Length: 110
Image (cartoon, rainbow, N blue to C red; front, side, top):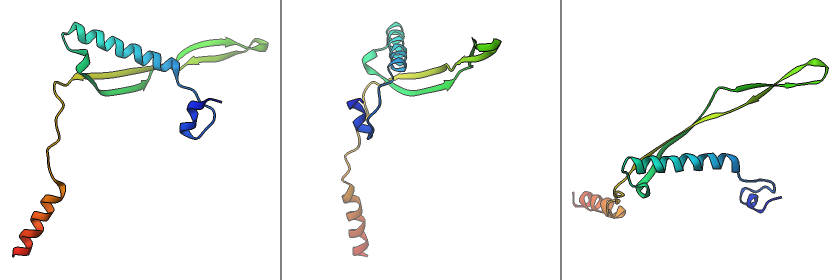
């Protein structure tokens, strides 16, 4: 029983610690690559991230009565593309009701 699982309406659940450490290492590596390429790490944003299955790693586990069983790992390829954004684009100042009101007034004049 874990209290962080209450958010998802269940009583059992944990955070994926092993996979999170790998993704953190990937982002730390991207940050150091950015510093090497004279980019500012504070202005980097993740624009694309993707995870694909990799080829299974085959091993053997030895069973009773001379049998051999498959013992496979399921690795993956993680890809992250970061881009530097100088200034965020500000949304235009539009009054959403003003355009329709102007069109209605135009139609009323006709």
